[in-house]
Length: 191
Image 1 (tube, rainbow, N blue to C red):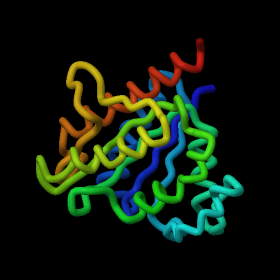
Image 2 (cartoon, rainbow, N blue to C red):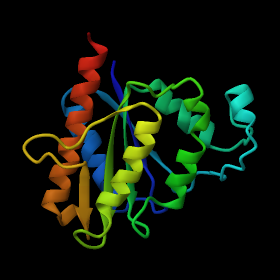
Image 3 (tube, rainbow, N blue to C red):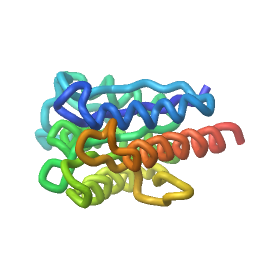
């Protein structure tokens, strides 16, 4: 069974990013994949301390919630990462998870997994594209396959504005992204 993981990089539970990631995962479920959501709000995530132990052992020396989250990504066939815009970038919670993913790059454990991005902001053109670009850079460095929200919109991913439950375009781009991640993950894992 193909599994898609949704990572909510917001420090808030049940906020706009959580809402759109859930919409994306629902669209993925609608075409027959299993999903799981991981909220970084409340997760114990310490910053990388550049000790380089992961280069020698392939594992991070810090004991917190990060290894468990990373193992979920490794065990999945695809994932969607969402973040609210914080000064034109991802939240510190998501950035720490990205920085701590270095052990996965030692032997490219995320290679050929399908990934997509969702960003939420207070205004249209409020940094959503630069936030999505930060997530895309992570996916490229991990050698994952990046998808956007697909036809008919063909954007970088899901982008929400304001109260996202009321943002029809944000909901649609997020649902399209979830469907696209699931479609490609199914295709890649059934051939």
